[in-house]
Each structure stands twice: as structure tokens, then as C-alpha cells.
Length: 314
Image (tube, rainbow, N blue to C red; front, side, top):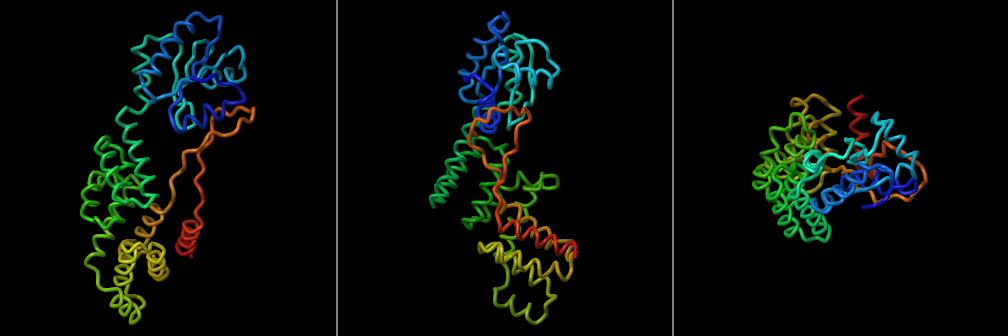
């Protein structure tokens, strides 16, 4: 539990909630119901074992923060609790509710114990992969997915790493639960394109034969597309995109936009996800809405996005 002030509001509430949900208890020393609620919240923080963090705000000592939150939610009384997730206030309740009702409130928003355990396994997998131990990383991701099979982010990372390891059949098997989501979910659709490309690359013509076919006919788009898939499966995504651009410059709609779709899929999985930010330095200012995590710019990805935009709008 931490006491929130104007100086640590951004670091300990906004940024902290991007890692773990934070329940802010707005109270005052003279408030009887606040004294009843406080111990219940502290008990639940222990019981939930890291699934959320408890923060407390003395409304007498921090009237600016309390006033802005009360105004934002249209609340004039205390105790008043606000749950922050991902840097944003997402829900709240007023009054000294029974423990059972507070549990029901928390369970709507905070991760389950299994989800937390899976996230820890996935983080370990990321570190193992960064250290070059791909086999151990894959094993960790398999454990994470077994714990939380509904976690699409973990599933997607597992699919991508299986492809990188050359285990294409396993990647297809792990991907299948995501396939129905490909219509509405950009990342699921991108993963499907990658899996299909790696599968096709296994039976593609030799690279020199494809190069000869292209040299003989610059508009042999089937050969260019086949070569792009080979290059992607060989771990050369920028070369694959260069080949796809050759198709798009000549025929944007070729093959029901197959070239564009694969190009976009490559960009989607090359782009780095938004990082979990570290706590910021206290600034002594209040920003209730919080700030979105900035995605580190990748000059290669940015450059290829611009190339695609120029070709499509030419």
C-alpha cells in the first residue's frame, strides 16, 4: 500500500497501473465508513497476492486530486474507490461495501492468479530468447500457454517463435484457435499470413529458379510472391517486402491483394509492442487521464511503412 500525493501521482498511480491494476481509496480521517473500508481493502490486497495494488489518498491533504477524480466520476462523498488499469481510471465504487461485493468488483478487472503466472512465464521466455536460449524460451511459452490458453498475446508469441525455430507444423497447430479471430483481429490475421508463408516456402521452387523466372518476365508475380515467402521463411523479412513492393508497383490488386496483405502482415509482426513503462519522475502535476505508453520507433519498420504508403497512393 502506498499513500498518493501530487508529487508521486503519476509515478505510483498512472505508470504503476500500466503494470498492475491499482485501486485508489479516497478517504479522510474524520470519515467513519472510511475507517470501516480501509482494513477490508488492505486484507484483500494481501489475499489477491499481487493481482492488484492498493493506494490511498487522504482527501483533506490532497484536495486537488480528490476533487478532480470526484468531478470526473460525478461523486461527492467518501469513501470513494477508483480502479486504474493501463494508466486510466476504468471503474469505481462509493461507500463501505461488503467484502463480497468488493471481490466481485475486483474480479471484473484484475487478472486471475493463472493469468499472472502465465505472464511471468512469458516474461521469462522473453529473457531466455534474448539470451539466445530459444529451446528454453519455447518451453516456457508452452508452459505459459498451458496455464492461460485464452491469452492470445502469449499464443501469438509462441507461434512466432515456433516459426523462427523452423517448427512450422507446430506453429500451425498452436495458431488454429486464433484463426477464427483473423477477420477482426489484425495481429491474428498477420500471424495467419506468416504461417501460410512458411508452409508454402517448404514446397517453393529453388531461389535461383525463381530469380531466373523473374529475370525472364518482370511481371511474373507468382514467382515474385513465391520468392517473397521463401525470403520471409529464411529470416529475411526486408528482402521479402522489397519483392512484394515490386509486385505492388506494377499491380496493387494482384491476386486479390495478396502482396499487400503479406506486406502488412510482415510489418505487423516486425513492429515492437508498446513497452511497459518504468515509473516516471515526480513532476508535481496532475493528469487524471494518464498517458499512453510510447512505442519505440523502429526506423526500418517506419521506412517500409512509408514505402508502402507511397506505392499505394501513387
